[in-house]
Length: 298
Image 1 (cartoon, rainbow, N blue to C red):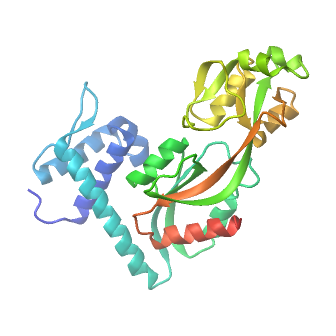
Image 2 (image 1 turned 90 degrees about the vertical axis):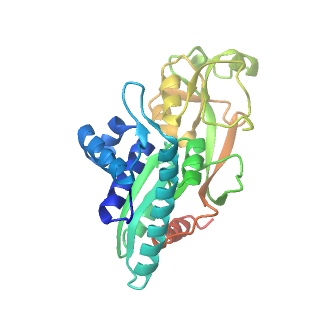
Image 3 (image 1 turned 120 degrees about the horizontal axis):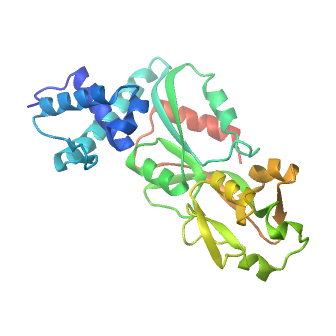
């Protein structure tokens, strides 16, 4: 039974949290830079320290026990308290420390208005010992990760406002309808709207049902869960799909894509920074947000 918490216990709890986040021992190997057998040994050590089993692993897959779920929640609360303590202690020296977890939408590196790289460069000019972790995911997954405490902040377009999140608008992105050079509509200069609707589309699986679009396809035999996946469907010539203009630009310039009715079949999305409304901001997080807003003054 665990009577006092040592540094080794904290390390074991962090390993346990990463394993849960990754969904199992195998998937956690790269994140932890450990072999599967080494991870298993650490989890077993933690279970011995606690006196009960935290997870089931084997042929049936990885899953948490009820006690494992409770320990995970307690560990996350403990990590949060440690982060706040570290931040407050380091404020006296003016040096930023810790880990910073940032989530982003995919395919924004070519969007001029998205000055994420400039914000990172500005942040790294500060005195700090911060390790930056950057993840790419869909808007819904980013929201969930911020709410669950897996990410400190995320930037994407969100068509809804959740009460547990704070939103800060940063920049906008223009979306158009594109077809590939191998598609039958590519050679038609002004295809009619009904003809466009009747084509096979690749739809966005990461958009909520209430997202307003200029035109909705009558038939979609493919679903993309990241914007780059839409590119593949359009380039194949088998599907029409909505893409950001900046993302499609290289293929348009190469003659491999064209936009259909650019004035009518277009829409814009607002990208915002989200943070958890109920979680205190550590010093490193506040500093990065300052640098991010400095690069996106609005």
